[in-house]
Length: 106
Ligand code: FES
Image 1 (spheres, rainbow, N blue to C red):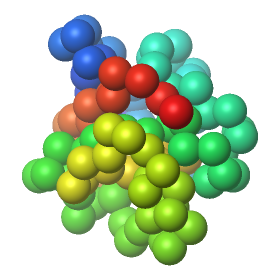
Image 2: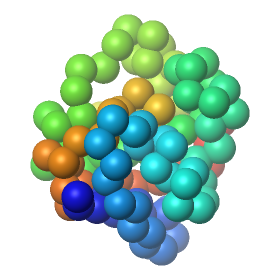
Image 3: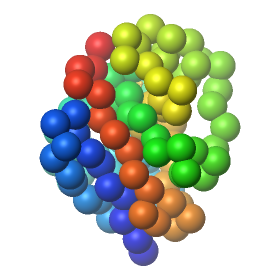
């Protein structure tokens, strides 16, 4: 199936197996990856599932919606490749993808 690598702000790394169709947020929660709060449960309404996608994988994560963009604009640690993990649907094409976690979720 393949794996996703999550890297915490301090460099600690976690791996989650890709389950096709599951959200990146859910994969993080199912694998006890710290730093994904997901307060709204995946409704693109809280911004607490912020991740920074490695640039090499960004085109595999799909289009960003205007609502997601607006939520990310409220995130202090927003970077050019920031995404909300609940808005990324996993596929095998993401095997090996690396995402970094911000220091704080707001
Ligand atoms: S879980 Fe709330 S925006 Fe992603």
